[in-house]
Image (cartoon, rainbow, N blue to C red; front, side, top):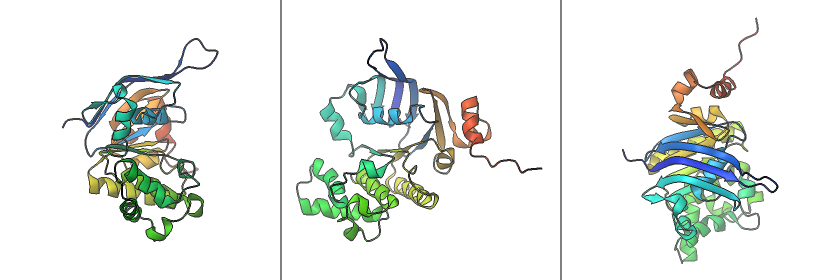
Length: 266
């Protein structure tokens, strides 16, 4: 099967004032993702997970430099103009960020923020855009979506805010969804609901899912394959079941051991 996403030798660095050499954040990252595939990106804090997600989306800060090649859906993303990248975002490749309270605009109602995605991509009728937004909020599990669409982010729960972000990301039926720590700010019960929703939406749409997390427990319940990042390097790219049974690298082993139940006391 032809890869939907092919990352080849991706490097990301950032220049710091006073330092003669830029600091490397990602080094020679290589992996592929097929249509409909579910892949986890696992790593401790500072391993480069979010940097990778932002690089794929073309959302790196201005002082970051990305080199290598990122082929997606017939496009080489790193060489595209910002306008071309913007036309792909939400329509073909989309992202859900980890903290919905900061990712959402606190001064704008939830429904308006979802509808804005449709308006930005050509829907000129405000009423139709709002109707699409309410329908998508309902499909992502938001109860009383029509009423909640008129609320501000601070007026709904964390789980409902995360559903609003997911509605924004899925509105235009992307081929690839990147979920960057989508459950890290949620309690265990809501976390399970959001993961179940992600899996259901993926099956319904046939989209590929790249799930970024520091939590192997989250990835183990969702992803068939896992990429392990350590200090900006890919140190493992393996079926998740194999990673859980026999991690090859000590850093991977430490992540696996962190989710195993402790041995009972003698």
